[in-house]
Length: 471
Image (cartoon, rainbow, N blue to C red; front, side):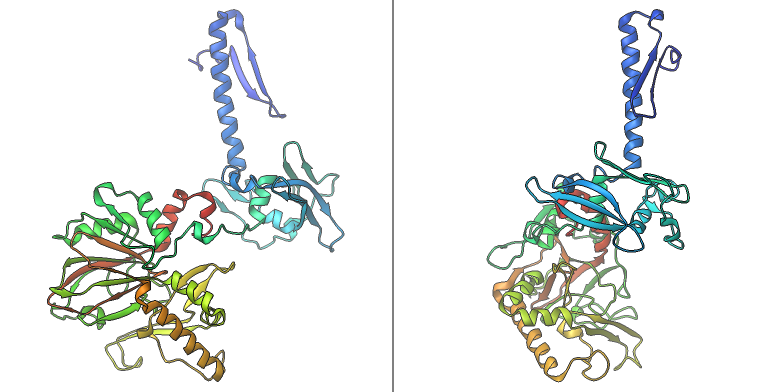
């Protein structure tokens, strides 16, 4: 309809971003004319808005930040050094006093969203930064840098002819690393006192969003109603959550304590029936497996309970009881290894090794990120040479490790469960320690590791905006 009569009614956006409608109403009745004019205007407004959002793709994403941060003024400041800076005055909150930060021009050029610098289709920068400082010079004209407080838009005209535009909201969202929300609002530390059973989802009601909420909050989740007669059903469920993290153990395992050993079998206590203390898996890998999956296909006649412990809660208890020991476990790297097929690394057919990783890993703001606790796979602890501890610090390290271990093995920290056929358990291996009691009789399990990075990439958008930077 619009194509047929487009020469009678037209709507365009002029240079001042104002809607301009031209028409010839004599050809139609007033009502028909108004319909055409309104339809044309709405369509063109939609196109213009889409283009505007494309030019400034971070506007919508940064709204929650901008509810609290607001630019007051932006000016060029040549007084700080030979290289000019941009002074940004802003407030945080309605009653906050004005704050100030200085941002170098090179930062603005690096963050330019002009077509020569940024690919909007892929959300990637185009510059390899081989000449960033040369390209960060302002044009020799008046008002090469100009901020319009009404439109909240900063315009920069560069010497090479490129023009950059920045929304004030985006400048604050990109340049200020806000403090994360309290971790307690994102995750819930637990022990025996506040978590009596595994968070559970029925396979018939499974959604990634429901899975994500429990996984992020507690570090574990179970899915019930899974067919235990065919391990492939478990594998299919795992692949709905995240890609499988393959190792030399294979991608998906079906194993038991009575199975015959073959050339693909591995020498690990997991394949026996003795008790195993709490630990995290894969501490001997540089890329620690992120998610551990268990499904008990056939339970033992006696014993074989699974013990789960919140490693983050244990670390927090240690911090409150002895902050010095807590810091020691965050700052002291230790080596873990896996040796198979020989008595030493020189004769082993498999020798996995991870170095320079502490027991407790923190992010730059001091929030817990990962626990690597496995007393059984520790390599020899070097005490002489570069980057080793002094003798008295070695003693303190063992005291700190012992304290953490006692807290982790305390019955009050445990969630004890008897795994049943049909219930698949997913553990955050960056957070949750697991153990097993000794058992008698035949027991068969299946499981795998999953990619934690891939899961988090898929679920971050399902979390509240303020929680995403923490997860």
